[in-house]
Image (cartoon, rainbow, N blue to C red; front, side, top):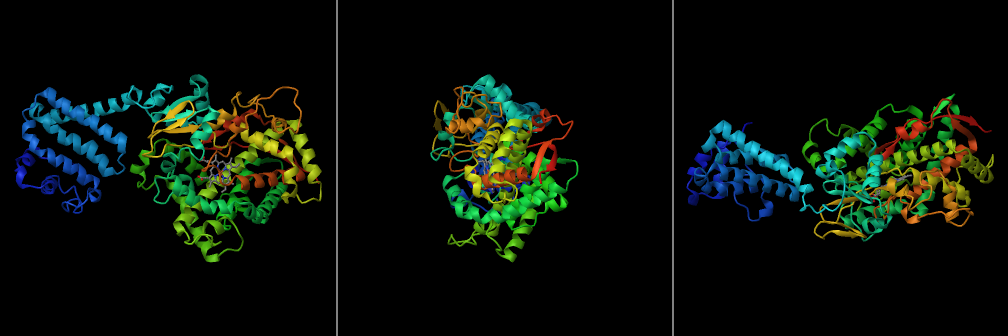
Length: 615
Ligand code: HEM
């Protein structure tokens, strides 16, 4: 629909005898019924109940008495008015970020159309409108580009590349390459510990900022999670920005991962790990270890989140949901950089198709699980309050959101760490041999490697897991935090993060910083034993345990950490007890890091290996 506003006719209305809403109704008739009956329902008692369109129209209507005077304006003044309106639009946009398409239309189509009335008397309809739109958008875009570079921007003191400072759109191109982690690392090497990676975002490499940014007195989550999930009405745990709501929502998760609950999951883990051993044992020749481990973690988390229903190790990805999960992850990472965009595109049918497909699956599984009731204590048991710990059970929509989160947060993270671990071991014969000795000592043939009873004694196993997570943190570019709205900015040691801006600790760079760890790029599990005094070292080693944050830090850090550790230890012990592993012939191990992509969670390439049974 084309909107044309007959400004002369509007200005003819006698201002005194019409209310704002009367004028709006007249405008609406002339605009072909653009506004709904609700928008035109008349004055309300409170401004809170007036829709954004009504507010804008009210402002425009109030300007009507001025319109006759506008006809007498000089062309120079007309330009100034249009330019000033563009600047005010930027100001409003910057501060409140309108979230509905009608608002976008009001600011970007209706407003310049109305403003055309100041140029039309001088240049005629076509030229006048053209000049107005050009002036309006020219001023608006110049302001958008120049403001982040100006001394008035609160992040002006942070260095960074010009393109990062101007727009997050630049980061979109970096993200699409899958190499965001290496790009940001290179920025830290060039610009220092705090780098501006977006107009309103800083990446931080300093370990001393971890506590003030992410600790209990730190900042809540930033807007990236809302962008990733298309601003859902009911966010999953990971998306809660209000600290008090996050604490409340995290309660069942904490119960689900306490020591008693973890013990109850052991039969579920054991069943899936022995299935993994069985399928690997049946493979002939080269196996893609990465793929089988991913299938295993996905099946296991399916058991945990929905009480079963996922059989990737048996059937493969026959319903395409695993592929949808990976594709969805790529797109979510794009959206997390431009969270405002997802407000406008979320209702387009094909947008977010993968996430919707995945959610549909979760909906079906949740319904089945409710019908079946609890057969064993799994994650669903706690999330749906089957344990009865909360007075009021959460509605199914909440349980579904959390179930999807469990599947996403618990499968690829653990799978990537396990694949990285086996890649490191197969490439470091000495560490492999040493771990094999430890596994054989505690789990010799005949001893049940699915029973975690000996794990507390397996210090080299933990050193290998830690070293893998240090070298390859699965969330390499970190998790965004932003100061709570209305509470002012946050002092992060030497740095200040003003309200309305965001920061992330760059886990990858912190873990590979020689100020935190000696020989930072080497796979050197011994460092963990040396740091604990369990092994001597000929050299003085730098080892900053506070800089090791693969599971993040603070009240919103990974809630599934203990489950992940138990699961990984069982898999390593079982596979090393049963198989001898080596890279496939002709495999170039350097390919591993080349194929590694930062998709918020790391995704990996193939891991071709030859597995020989040891028994
Ligand atoms: C090696 C395995 C894993 C690693 C390295 C890992 C790492 C992380 C990281 C870095 C975060 C971001 C925290 C933040 O925003 O600051 C996170 C969050 C989360 N993880 Fe994990 N994770 C792993 C396994 C798991 C498992 C098995 C689960 C089980 C369901 C899980 C559930 C979650 C949940 C629910 C969150 C959101 C926590 C919150 O917002 O309160 N993770 N994880």
